[in-house]
Image (cartoon, rainbow over the protein chains, first blue to last red):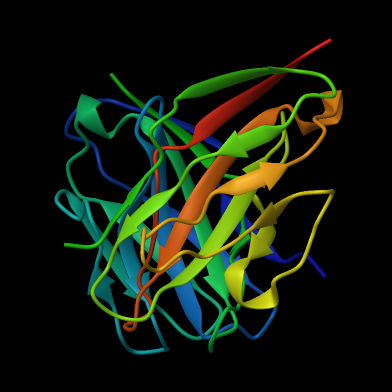
Length: 113
Length: 108
């Protein structure tokens, strides 16, 4: 089992460029999440999808869009990248129900110059 | 507002000494609380969850609704416990938010 797979692992963008971070899980999980991790700020929730066909804003959604393409895939798009979006991005998924743990991907390190 | 607070950015403890990582939460509903750990160059992974009342790697955490706390404890620290620890709160609409994390450094 691959678990949660994120691509790419690294990316450098120029200000104003766009890109999509891909995330796929093979555990038949219902809920999927996107977080960013910054030094001293911990993990901050960007968007999440509690089930296929639904998406909701998290704590820091501005500048991002998401698509829950199907049950397996949840992508994060930066339409016009800004240096403030330089971060490590993590995708995670969970089965559902009470106390199901999150399973994390390996992260995408994004630098915006 | 929903919030998870971890007041210590860094905690340094001598090997063999007790460890307590603090976590306080703010949530009006019935909370589900977790501790996650990130070892160097590894993925974030679940350490324990409050509903299970389990002990993992010697760590325990008790939910105190009166004090809105979920502190992580271990009686005797080991060098392999050095890592980044995150407290997390799951709300009724499946939102899962994290605290800022505490880096635990075990001194030899």
